[in-house]
Image (cartoon, rainbow over all chains, first blue to last red; front, side, top):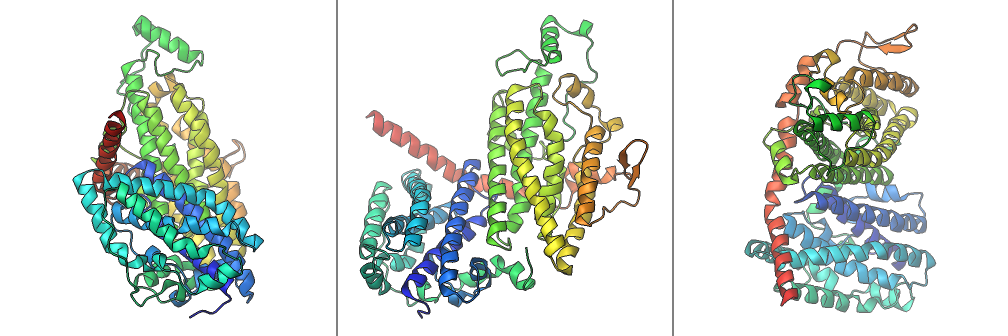
Length: 253
Length: 329
């Protein structure tokens, strides 16, 4: 269901994934297991909303139909969202929250690394700025995977259960797709073809250190976040996030 | 801010002849505006009063995240979302360094949090009011943080060193929040449609009186103030601070083009102060006792987070121990 040029599609995937991941983190305010984690959750969320804004501002310029980054976030329906299916899934317990964060970070950081070398200077610039943040994100989430996986019996059980439950959405992270060919050839995302292997390597290393069992390779489930075919969860995420813009059309905030 | 009716456990302030030599030396230091530091001798009642006040302040920062958390998922633009998230993060940070300041007095964070969950320790009454529309995010910044600043600016000079230094940092961030909050409202009033302007007035109507209550009971009903002032934990009376807040806020209210829900509000040319109507103290005391609109929900939410996070914290400790053992081996 590709509607824009490849570069714009990539920008939407990046922006939307960061935005929805951050939106899920916002739901956790006041509910973290420790005060230090309240600070960390908002910190990661802030980074991701900031990144989303940068990607989507550029996307909006390229789409060039008068819409702004805000319009893209607050006025698109779920069929137009390009985020990974993983990030729209509910937070669950802290093990699930961290499993989702880690699996996302392990995709996000290597992708940003490649984009730092993009022939598109704008993309390279945003990636260079984001990579510092995302390096911290994956350091933090890997630590939590290890703490919970190799902590107590209960935490191990919870972490393994969270992984088993969320794993089937990783097919989007573990498998290359068509867009990669042109993005690589055009040097928009040089080396992106290696992304999936890198994701697998990072995940395998951390799960092993965390004494967790990696589930079997996830198979395509006939949905596709990047093509706008989502799970039932996204509609509710958007209903909440877009409430004011929908209830008061054309209002200035 | 955020400290209302902090008990000192002292019935009347001792005169210098009633004091022991240690107490006299302590009071001399206070009177000379020399900060008390963690390792200095201090009267037990001073230490306990400070633990109560600082923990109350810290709890308020943490519970204060909840009314904003109620809207952070619904912030209307990317800019507003980023602002609100940053504010919430600052509050969690304030909570952290206030608890640290409190721990220098020998108190334990977990114990004090537990007291709050059991209803034995208070937090500011203001956070027991619900946030019902987006303008509340502006009003909380402008009025609630504004009232907090009026309370906290003198606390930068409070006699206990670690608390005073924490306040200096907190005040800087709170001033920023206040300006941001006011800007949210000003934007709604100047650029907004009728429905948005109504949101602002509705928000001010709901928060006005509870904000005035943030300064605590009137001086006549503030039995603990004399001792707190003698110890320079507190530097101005509740009514003085409340008046200062009202005097600085009314011109801002007028610029917004909004009104306060107080028919008795009028400017006294002679005194140069705004006079205001009677505060409903019955409501204040009820909310403080736990019978406000959201008391139960606020405490339940915090308790749930800590209770349900127990296995996470246990895992972190277990992992750290394992790692240490491995490193030692």
